[in-house]
Amino acid sequence: MTGFIFWFAWEFLYLIKQAIIMSDVSLSGKEVKVHDKYFVPYISAERIEARIKELGKKIVAECGDKEPLFIVILNGAFMFASDLIKEVPIDCQVTFTKLSSYVGQHSTGKVKEVTAIDIDVKGRTVIIVEDIVDTGNTMHHYINDLKARGVGDIKIASLLSKPEALQHDIQIDYLGFEIDNKFVIGYGLDYDYKGRNFPDIYQLKS
Image (cartoon, helix red, strand yellow):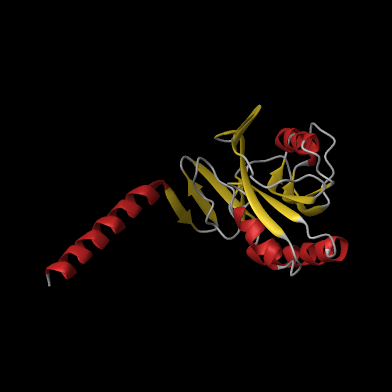
């Protein structure tokens, strides 16, 4: 009985803690409020799912015999990578790295490598999996890093791209959607660590 009471108390405290954490993330009709900003629906979960299936087929057709190495850029690409790689039933390897250039809604312009991969990429076909390419600074930095390490072939899979914001010549081989140059959240993308769990993508309300 004592054990049950302890478990119940722990669960109750946990729920209270989660309620406090989520207190400034609220749903309001078709809009969502995250921290101090409002976002409106932009790309539905159904459209995302359908597009990822198409990308998976293209990757299989082009890389099916190359045993590609997927390098997933954390944190934002984790949902996209999970769904994409499930649509690629071929021999492959998956690893993760963390690169950071954002504070809040804005890119600092400086790329910081938080976590490096521990797999030799020399001579490999690498598919970088990213959530969004906007200025292209992060991708430009990482592509040059991989080339310096002797990578064989580099391809990029990105859920989103902002052509208006692009500052580097970045070729995205497997692109989900081109979008306007506005801040977006959901499906892995966040605003100060919140909003990643939304199944749809939302755009900052004008």
